[in-house]
Image (cartoon, rainbow, N blue to C red; front, side):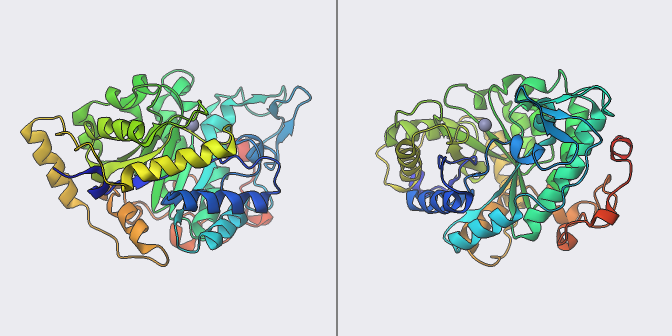
Length: 391
Ligand SMILES: [Zn+2]
């Protein structure tokens, strides 16, 4: 029986970090340094440019910030003049200098659409109009491509509203169509969903991501996943083991208890550990301490042995077989050790090299990772954006 610190558990964050008031570059610097100092292996740039909707809606032509504070779609959405986050990613990656892997984070098209309002006269019927969501997916695909071109091997799509919308305002088919091309671009695509996902656990498992990030300290989301479906999906689960709604810093042993409970449901090779959600609302001292305790929980010698994982013999054997089918990537560039651990958890069936070279709805041949190095010029934009998005 191995102790927790002997397991290949990877620590990460969801994205935001409490740096409010600092200019973006200084905010990124603080977020990167403090996440690394805490011992987190897969970090973010801290998302220093405001709320997750405004940072994109504020730059996409066709949105306006209405007087009541709501982002309103007033026209056919168009491509911004330049990528929104690529420079921040490059800056963060340079600061990390190989001490941690840096992931890119992009707000998902469903959350962006459902957080907005469609003005009379705009060429969409409402926030849940598939034409609007698919057009946003297309535009955000360029953003993901820019992050990949900047070196991001892990890109997370944030869809906090999916937990409430999937199966209601948003069908599983539409979610799959909207997210598939975004997930096809990075080497290791991650989906983060906030809140209670117990009723949509099955649908989330079939979305084409290599990892799914969920909260789990206040809501027993992980327990709602069917063990057989979890095995079949083969994706990594990034499980919240740090409460982000309470500034009280939980003890290392409390976090270890949550980790051990997660290990009852999924093997360590497919388990990442993270806070429940972004840290931006926490006092900076609490955020730092929570991350340090998270890292300590997987690195310090344990007093508590890991319990025997639940499941019958055939399931354990199946997990072992699945594990053996995953081949490790060679180290790439800096921080090869962490990246190797990430890449080795990539489900074989969804590796980007086995995907179609060009995403289905992209209007110019720049979709694949290897050639996604330039932002489309204005002349290359698809004409009639609303109409083409629904094609
Ligand atoms: Zn969240």
